[in-house]
Image: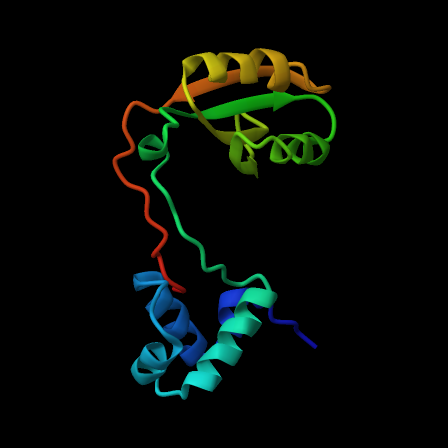
Amino acid sequence: MSRVLRTKSSQLDDVSKSIIEQLQLDGRRSYAEVGKKVGLSEAAVRQRVQKLTESGVMQVVAVTDPSQLGFTRQAMIGVRCGGDTRELAEKLTAMPEVDYVVLTAGSFDILAEVVCENDEELVALLNSRIRTLPGVTSTESFVYLKVAKQVYNWGTR
């Protein structure tokens, strides 16, 4: 018997995908408005949204522009390490300045995006907290000069 691997997106029906796409266009839309677009009642949309969020398939959040909130320095930190990358990733995710952590294949073991108030905070974060973590062998910082595109509406493809 052959087994078919299914991804989360392939487990979603077309209506759930449409709900996600509607909320990606405007996360403030009412369930009634979304229901009109996808052909469901307000209650049915509410129930589906609850299931999608509880299962971790979807989040509804407000996205801010860090530079407008006083965080003038963003950077991607490439981390090379020895040992278990998962343990190091857990330590990085616990840092409030770190907003994105991925384990990678290639010249870096981990990429961590950081948001800092200024360059001094970035230097302190790197020297006092990231580079001192057990297992870190080296880091390379990619300081953002300008964010040209950052979107979260790539849909459910």
